[in-house]
Every structure is written in structure tokens, then in C-alpha cells.
Length: 228
Length: 228
Image 1 (cartoon, chains in turn orange, green):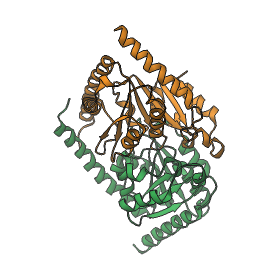
Image 2 (cartoon, one colour; image 1 turned 90 degrees about the vertical axis):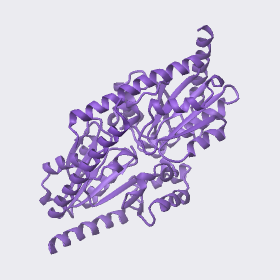
Image 3 (cartoon, rainbow over the protein chains, first blue to last red; image 1 turned 60 degrees about the vertical axis):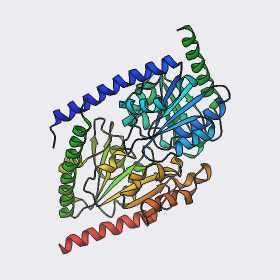
Image 4 (tube, each protein chain N blue to C red; image 1 turned 120 degrees about the vertical axis):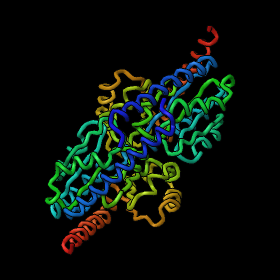
């Protein structure tokens, strides 16, 4: 078995290379004036549903690209494309997260100049993706009510490094044991004041505020480029 | 950055060492006559609730140990101990799965001769734990209805290598879009005829069949040891 120090060394080399590629991705997105999101969540929290609802609502107002990371199948990219986005699938071949190198390959396949918004849907995993920044403008964690109110306490890393928190499936609050106070307290300890949207992709409740925020962020990115 | 071949080589060394340690763990559990389960699932599918229900129901009939893997906190081990088990917490320090070496450390802390059943609750992750067998007698995947019926298609690896499938939160079926036929079809493609329990840890529906199976498996292990 490799020595622990050798393992750590290999790991640091991988993470360092990822940081460099993430910076390069960020520059490309900035230069093209594209606002970009990295959606992370447990399997089944509702990333793909949020992508669908967002694309359906905004496709008439802006040009949207979606990059779907998955360990198998192109089900998610198919759903994003059906909703009206330019969708690229990355099959990670079993790997548990996207990395900046994979996103670079996807950016190569997209006409960035023809996009206003890029949504990257990461692999469903609450742990591994947090260690691999992709170079997007904002990291969005999609939590969901049926997962339980203890998740910030148990997966602190995924709540710490994010700019936006979406709490999905609020329509299930009457049917599951979930204390919003306990959940929020855990989030506040890790990421005080983090921008939070509570919504249901199923019923549409609360989606408006999320969509307004995306619209404003895309507009701000456009104006920034116009001034650049 | 390390070369890909170097990364693969390090990875193979790690997996090979894990297999050896898993075999050693298995021998220890066999010799002590302990029947053992490796519970795997997405975050929030209900692993800990299943442990609680199982310990509450069976603690009067058998001696139960619980090993809880988590990247932070001892919330799960506290719940298992409160339900009546001898509980050991493994904090993985951020690592996304348990491995056989970590389980060995936990076995060292338990009096195996004083146990009939050992439940190992893996880290909440539908991808990484599948690559690291621990040496337990059966791998149990806990799926949950609100995660959606597409999960076997999207996370095939986690459905392939298991002996038992528990479909939890069936009380939420009326409130979420989940077609049991589509789910079952996906499971059957990957793991034909896998032993399946559909239940709700919240309402108790379907728990009896699961508990009967655990009881019988523990009894068979006891008899096997008696004859050995």
C-alpha cells in the first residue's frame, strides 16, 4: 500500500491542478459574459427539477446552457434539453464529482458567446464535489425537506463553501419530521446570512424569488461585460 | 500534476489493501458468530431511522452493536445508543466513505463475543462506499421514495453490488412523483431478484418483514457457529 505521505502528495497535486483549471474556466466565462452556477446536492434533492423549472421560466428571456454531470446515463441532459436549454452531458465514468478539467471539456463544446446563463449540474453527492471548484460564479446547494433537518450538522463542508442555498420540496413539510428552526440554526453556524430560497419545484411555491435572483445576476453580468 | 498511470496505480494499491482488510474483518465476525450488515444510502434516505427502529424492536432478543460512519458529529451513534445498542462512532475526517481499515479500528473497540448482530451505517453517499467492501455479511442499500424513481438508472453501481434493498418512506408515495414500476424495472436490470423490503420507518408499515429477515439471519449465523 502507498505510504500516507505519498497519498497526500498525489492528492495535493490533483487539487492544485484543479484550482488552476477552475481559474481558467472562470476567465472564459467572464470574457464571454456568461453568468454561471454550480448546482450541488444529494441524489434526489431536486437539482434536475430546479434546472427544468428555471429553463422553462427563463428560456424566452435569455440563452441558457446546461452541463449535466452524471456517473451514468444522459437522463438529466435530456430533461434540460426538453425544457429548452443547450445541454451537454458529462459522464464521469463512475467518478463521484465533476472537476474543472471535465467542465473545460464541456465549455469547449458550447458556444459561450451565444449564452447568458450556464447551469452546471454536479453529480449527486453531498461530500466530494465541494473539494473541486469548477470556476463558476456561484455555488448553489440544493437541500430538500425529506432529507431531514440534521444535514447541515452532518455534512458541514457542503454548507460552508456555498453562495446560495435552495431548500426544495417545502410542499412535503406537513408529512415529514423537519424542524425548519433546527435546520436554519445549523446553516447559520456554518454560513451566516447565506442567501436562501425555500421553494417547491413540484408546486411552484417560492420559485419566483429564485428566478428573480437568477434574472438579476444574469443582467448584472451582462452590464459588467458591457463596461469591460 | 501526477500522471494518470501513477494515479491509477495508487488507487489500485488502496483498493487491494482494502480487500485484504475486509477479508480479515469477515473472518473476525465469522469467528465471533456475529451477523453483520453494511447500510449504504444517500444522505437522508433513512439509514439512522432504520437502525433505530431495528434496535428498538430487537434489542430485547439479541445483543446489537452499531458502528456509525460520518464525516462529522456523533449524532447517529447517539441515536443508536439511545435505542439500546452498543454504538461506536467513526468520524472519517471528511472522507466520503468507510473503508475496511476504519471498520477494523471499530471492531477493536467492540466486544464481538458479546454481540449477535452488528450494523455498520456507512457515510451518506450513493457512489463512493460501493467501491470499499468492509467484510460484512450483507450490503443493504436504503433507497427512499422522495429521491425519485430514476435512481437505479443514475446510480447503477450502488444497486448492483447489494444483497438487500430497502425502499424507505413509502408513506410519502401519495405526495411525490414516484412510479414504483419504473423504479423496480431499473433495479431488476441491475440486480435481478434482489431481496427487497418496502417500508416506512416513520409509520412502521412494512417493518415486520425486514425485522423477520434480520432475526432469521442472526439465528442462522448462531447455528452455523454452533456447528463450526
